Length: 270
Image (tube, helix red, strand yellow):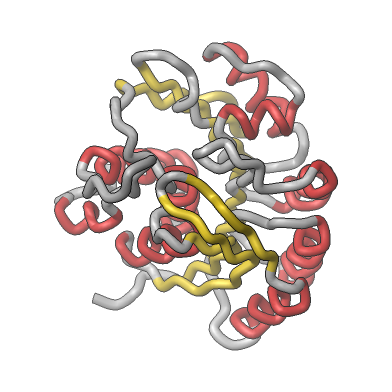
C-alpha cells in the first residue's frame, strides 16, 4: 500500500506517545498517508500530567518546515501546540509564503491534566494571524471559551461560540463537546453554509489522552485525500470513537488511544 497523500504536522512532542507529534504521526499513518513533522516543543509528560516544556528555537522550527516544503511538499498541514508568540509569527509567515491549503488548527492551550500550555500573548497572535489562514479549527470547550470569552454550558452556547470563531476568519470550525457533563455528545460543525451537529452517546472512560491531537490529524489526513469537510468530520470522529473504545489501558492517568484501530475497521469511509 502506497501513501495516499502527504501531511505536514507542526506540533509539540509528547514523551509518553499518546498525544502531540507522536499521536499525529500514528494517526496520519493509520489512515493511509505520509507524515512529516516540524517539532515546536519538547515535553516531559506521561498519562498523569506535564512536568516540563522546552520550546524549540524559532529558527529551527521554521527550518524544519521549509526543508520539507522545498523538497517533498504537502497536501495538508496540521498545527498543534505553538508554545510562544515568536513561533506563531514564524508559522504564519511560512503559511502565507507557500500559500498552503487544507490547514487544520488544533488550538492547544490546556493539557488534559489542566496544565496551561500557552501564554496570553500567544493566544492573541493565534487569533489574529493563524485563524484567517485555516481551513478548519478544532477547539474543545475550554479552548473555545478562551478564544471567545464566552461561558459554554450547553449546545446553544456551543453554536454561538462556533459562529463567533468562524467570524474570526477560519473557513470552518468543529467545536467538540466532550467537556460538557451530558450523556450525549453534540459536536458542532460551523461552516459558511450553516451548522451541522454530530450526535452520539458519550463514552465513559479515562482513556482520552491525545483525543484532540488525533482528531485534528485525522481531519487533516482526510482533507489531504480530497474528502469534503462533512465527510472528513464523519470519518475522523468515527475513527477517534473506535480508538477510544479499543484503548490499550496504558498508564495510571488519562490513557492513550488505540491508533491502530483503523486496521480492524472494514469501512471508515462513512
